[in-house]
Image (cartoon, rainbow, N blue to C red):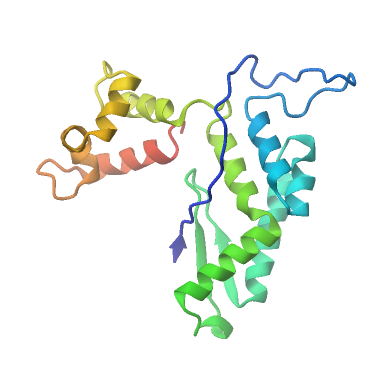
Length: 208
């Protein structure tokens, strides 16, 4: 079964200057936390009590090799508990969890507890979720702005709608139903399953 967990990350909104450009620290060394996601990476590192998380984020980067190792550690941790675990990252993240014979009697709550435990001990939470967010939004733009741009690019929302109007519409149930009903509500008279799939793609991976 495919599982999606909500992993909370308190990530500050940054004022962007030169995306990807490193600044010099007082010691003369390049500051690894000077890029668009620098403050977020530093916050996660400083607030974590997990040695793996702190070590990976020491240089302000979650590289491919580190991601592969964390995924491998998570796979092994779940295998030790009797599960076949596969990470599915198609932009929106996700996990496939299949109990082996040893774990077949486990409840959903027990499976969830094991997922969360392995996620924390291996550093999978929050590192791979954070890496996914950085990959999907390297300049750390406001996610609502990215979603609106995608919806307009895919012609699901009128190009004249501003970000403020979009945010207001999201908070107004009647307006939201009128604009997004065809993509969100299967009971809507003009519901379009194909466009609904495009809508989901925009809301989960707006830059793809």
